[in-house]
Length: 241
Image (cartoon, rainbow, N blue to C red; front, top):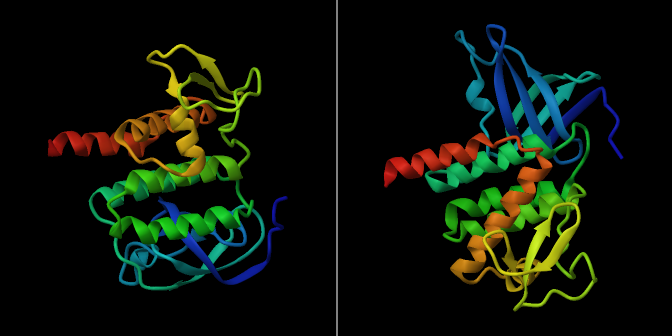
């Protein structure tokens, strides 16, 4: 159920997902808020000139946001830092770009997602201090798909409703689930489906297969629309090699 459009909101916890220039001195800002979901805001006078405040709207930092007005583009009236947070750098920064692009693509406006908001906030705090970023990203992707109605079937096969077998290979059909099949380039091992279900991605082969599967499912639900952050990360990795 979507939240109503309030007239005035004060100090709402949120994060900036995306911002783009609007006219000479303003920004159009998409934020992910705790109680109102994704909201588009007009930030007047925050760029250009002597009173520019564009740095007050950084991505990846917990903020307290205030806005006023009904309709699709309320006016941003205040921004405060909610808490200190370590900056995202290197690989963690590219992971942050990916998370924001996922949320921007999947979230509907004014549709609160409190669990997803909590997981996103926790992930941003964990990314700068953990080396196990793959596990964190896979867990978030699973939560995103589950909370938005696209959850993966990881308990039984789609044809016979038999429990997933670790030694069996499967073809995973989006919107349907896994189907027992011979092992080939398009299959995934049952042990990987079980590991995803239990949150255990302990070896390189399982991590690689889980990443391949989730990217395939996300690609399907985005109707083939590419994610720019993935290409950006590939380019950066190529430059560093």
